[in-house]
Image 1 (tube, each protein chain N blue to C red):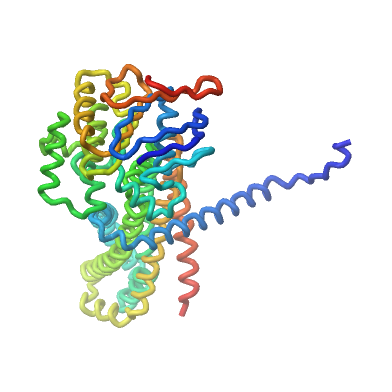
Image 2: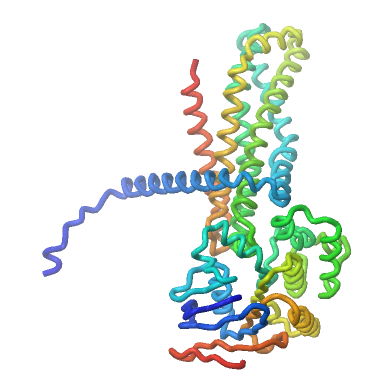
Amino acid sequence: MALATAPVVTPRPVAVHLLGAKVVGGVHHAAGSTALLLHAVARLAALRRPPVRTVLLRQVYFSGIEALETVAIVSAVMGVVIVSQVVGLAGASSLTGKVLVWTVVREIAPLLVAILMVARSVPAVATELASMTLHREVDTLWAAGIDPIAYLILPRILGMTLSVVALTLYCQVVAIAGGLALAALAVDLPPLHQLWAVGQELHPCDLGISLIKGLLFGLGIATAACHHGYRPHTSATQIPQAATGAVMHALLFLFLTDGVVTFLTLP
Amino acid sequence: MIRFLDVCCADLEGVTFEVVTGECTRVALASAETRSALVRALLGLERPRAGRVLLLEHEVTACPPAQARTLLARTGVVWAGGGLVSNLQVGNNLLLPFAYHHGRPGPEVEARARALCDVLGLETSDAALGRLPAELSPTERCLAGVVRAWLTDPEVMIYEGVLDGLATDRARGVAEVVCARHCRGPTTLWLTADDRAPQPAMAALALRQEGHRLVEGAP
């Protein structure tokens, strides 16, 4: 009799079910990350505590200073490639400097630095935090009266964000310098003339937008790393999963945000 | 003051006991899981299934986070295995709670940390204090945890199976040092799940679940 009165359940197509699960998972992750970021921001006053400042400086060193060499090489090569392409297409002209500004300053520099950060720091932070939660070190901190979010999360988010913003500026300078150096050496474009063209084309608004992008990218990828790492873990196999999840979500956030900001700031 | 009022957690049902201010009590438990559950309930890391757990007259799980942290800052905990932060050198581990709550430690605090290490037989050379926790032996990790907790002069000390599984002469020496310190020291709760491990001489209570009955008494 119970069977007769049971509601008829129509099986959903598997694809719809999977898509729904993905969407729900994504929303859940976004909500969790936002909550973690807000918790961290609410604890900014904890920066007056020496151990928190020490963690912040260590994070800036690891994410920012140790990345200088890699960012310099990649940026210089990028500048050279862009200039050689422009010269190849349009010949030696003042267009070279303009294209450098359009591409490097507005678009590529923040994105490139953020991608390098995702490759270097996001898995490191997620793995470190996941290992700490697995081994109950977070409980140890709590038991000592130390706020784990203030001590572990806030300095990591802040350190990575500051690093992305600073490296974005650094990347822009190195890429433009590298591109102009190639232009001067290979195709005999006078560097001062090109520099003048860059200066003419470069508006404070462009720099502002690129720094805002850097800020958003930094906050987003750092929060993704911390959110995946800081969740409760009960097995060692969850540690690489935390790193992979953090990288994937950080990349997704990065490209979505870049698209949205670029669309909103179209001239 | 530590008080368990009709607490149900892990395999324990209806546990009631207290450690009054200034008193030292050793509690023997049947398993490491039960021992861990009692500590976690006491520190507000887990809510017991029933009953109330009071630390310094407050229920940590019922306190707002800031108040809970203030309470816990007045409490020293030594975890089984030491509970050190794995990515900090031993020296920084020892000073972490002090630095967090009181600001950058001066030379006198560092000298005190070295003196406490000496008392417990922990190496104090710069090289030794520059090691990471993973490079220490289990006994050294426990001793570092003890020094870290003592350095903040807590009102309540909780030892979670610190010497369990360490039946060595060194561990026996540590038990004597702990006992000597707590004769005049803070309210102390020493939890153990290993009858064969060295234990400090203090008032003892055994909590064991036998069927549905909780057995209390001297271990």
